[in-house]
Structure formats: C-alpha cells, structure tokens
Length: 459
Image 1: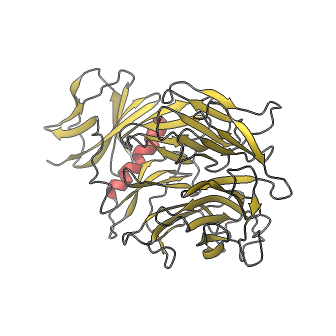
Image 2: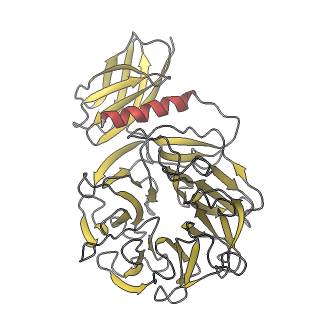
Image 3: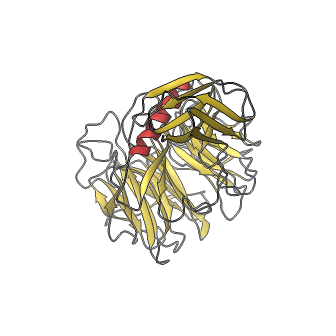
C-alpha cells in the first residue's frame, strides 16, 4: 500500500508543477489500473472504480481519499471491467469482468460480496467491457452479456440477486460479445458490440438478435475488429456512437474508427478515426443544447506492434462528430505494476455531478473544465495541511487509527521526509523546518487506505 501511495504522490506533485494554456486538462486522481467507473446516482461524490485481482477502489469524497475493497481472492488474475451501482438502491453493486468467473454482488455498499451467477460447469464467464447494465426505465432490472464460454444473454429483475438466461447469440454470428447498450427511448431495443466489428440489435428485450449494417452492404468490418463500447445520445436517441478496436497489425487500413448512427441503430458508418484502434466512448449534450459532445479514447494490445495507433490518443468532438480535436499534454505515467501502455478503457460522463472521468491502464483521470468540476459543491477534504514557523500543521476531521505512517514528497516527486504518525484528534504537528521553500504533498498511509493534502512552504 505504501508503494501504491508513493506512485500516487509522485504523479500528483508532477501535476502541481504543470501549467496549461488550455481551458481543459485531464487531472490524475490516482495512478492505478482503472477499467471502469460508476457513480452513485444519489450522491456523485461516491465513486467506484474497477481495478484488477478482485480489487474495487472506493471513494466517498469525490476522489480525495480512497479505500481498496476486496470482492474475492486477491490471488485472482482478473480485471473488473463491467459494473453497475443501482440507481435506486445504491447499496447494490454488481460486478463482472475480463477473465472473471461470473458475477459478484454486494447489497451493503461493498462490505460483503456473494457470487450471484456462475457457470455450473466451471466454464469461463466473462463480461468484457461495460457488459452489465441497469434498465434506466425499470431500476432493479439488469442485463448481462456474456463474452466467453457462450454468447448467453441474461436478465435479472431483482437487482442482480438472481439471473435468467433469456437468449443466446450463435457462434456463427460472432465468437465473442464485448459490450452492450440500451437505447434510452426504448429499452426493449438492445445492442451488442462483438468480435468481427459487428453490432447486433434486439427489438424484443434481448430474446433474439440480428446483425446491423456497419458499412455499405456489410454487417462486419474485419474478422479481428472488436466493438467494445456503444452509447446513445440523451438529446436525440436516434443518434448513437460506437468505437472499433484493431487486433491484427496486418488489418489496419480501413479498420478501427468511430462509428455513428442517425437512424436509431438500424445502420452504422465509420465517420472518423479510421485506421486507429479505439476502446472507449461517451457522449454528453453539447454547449448549444442541440449537438452531442463526443469523447473517445484509444487502445492497443500490449502484444501488438506499435504501428497500430491507439494508446494515448484521446479526442473530442463538441459538434456531434463534424470536427475533432486531440487532447494534448495528458500527464501519462506508470501504474502500480510498472506498466506504461496508455490504453483508455472507459470514459464516463457523470450527468449529476457534471464531471467527466477517464479510466486508463495508468490511472483514473477527471477532466478539469473551466465550468463544472471545481464549482460544484462536494464533500470537503478530511485532511488539510499548512506550514507555520518550521512546523507542518495537520487539520484532520476524520482521524483513522489504521494510518500509521506519513510521507512528504517534493515537487519533483522525490521523498523529502517520512515518519510514524502520532495518534491524535483534530490538530497534529510534524516538525519540518529543514525543508526548503516550495510546494509539497503529504500522504497518510494505511494498509488499504490513503489520503493526501498539498501544502506550500514560503518563508
């Protein structure tokens, strides 16, 4: 845990040193593998992020502090890539993922977990990319699209406690389901993104599916193409967006890209980003209230040749796909296991808290916009720090006896001081008169929890 906190602080202090000439920049919240994020619909300060090895990261203060919540054995080599926090009973959390063994569920906010669905023959049961969703028109009803073992489609009518298989997609149509989406104006209309660059559609609530046209006269892009994410506009549900990933460096030309539909998903077309591999997309209302503001993120398998463009590419279209601009200056770093590949796994617009989050291989980011992020009231930080007369004064409104050590990092990310944390309530002090003028960050460490606070020394 101390090592994870050190990666976090090194990234944070580098951000303190960065300046930007643009009105928008991505801010790193923590540098750990992040595959999906869900926001509590009743309190957007409550965040849940899927990590790996059965680890869920949870924050109750909009990302100022985090807890690591195990949902199973930490020896598992899995990735939490599909998650639902119920909109009406936010104590219910349902999770599946890549290299997963089914669906796990908590009904007490993550304190305890049970397996809600598994394969009785112990065959793989993956939910690859945002492949579990809740019906917005009928909270408590959930759907899950299985991406390994079989292409089964499941429904739950009791907040994910029990599941029924209501349909199966034949292996002659696709060998893997990657993701799913409900059309907001009619949740009987369901879409699946699949291997082969196929987008399947159901008009009967998931009982049957048929391929849609993804190019003139074609229902598939390339055999290696994947459709890992599909979203629809909240402004006009006839408008939808999907992204395509490339898995074969021999099939780059004409592959990948951003697909759009303007007829409710009957047909789709590549309209931008072709020859580039993408994994993440989300959409929010544009500033003019008419168009869609689209954000996409790229992806490349770590085993692929780097001639495939994708990782580190994040783009935005504020006018429904007419023009695109790439985000520059994203503070990419290194994750907790030393990887540096910059895949974007999920982009999530929080329509209640009005924040835009990005889950990547090297951390969780939030878009710091000129309006919205810093102006929205949120849970105040429980830890504040200020320097006076050679002493660092900590104001701690939520002391935790599990926090045993402290570390101070300088603006260059280097450890400046460390020590054992003395117990106390309210105000605590740490002598640090030997530190030079400058900006610093202090971290309080517990085994499964960490908190941070910036401070400045100016004599």
